[in-house]
Length: 132
Image (cartoon, rainbow, N blue to C red; front, side):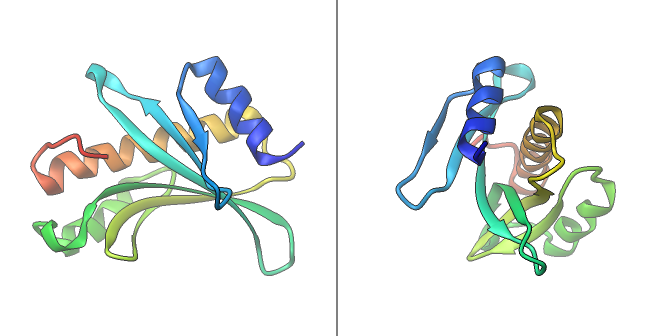
């Protein structure tokens, strides 16, 4: 089974809209509390030994408007799923899963908790806007 099949099954069950971009990335709009949503992106890659890995990330905001970049990085310590990082010019929350051996619940939890962490970070570091 490929990544899109796994994510489509989870998104359908959770009623999360999804789309696959031409570059192969999968974007899922994860529903959070109080009507907020957060887009999570998934892409397939390989670890250094060649095993398939799913990279899961969500944008919290642009690096130029982060109030306290050190606080953004310290936020990682509080996370069970993912960590904060900088991708291009954006602050993200990212997580990686080895595809073999990961079940639907592992993917669902990774997507939900990465989305929730990015949304919380967006609210704390960027003043509460729901932009992602």
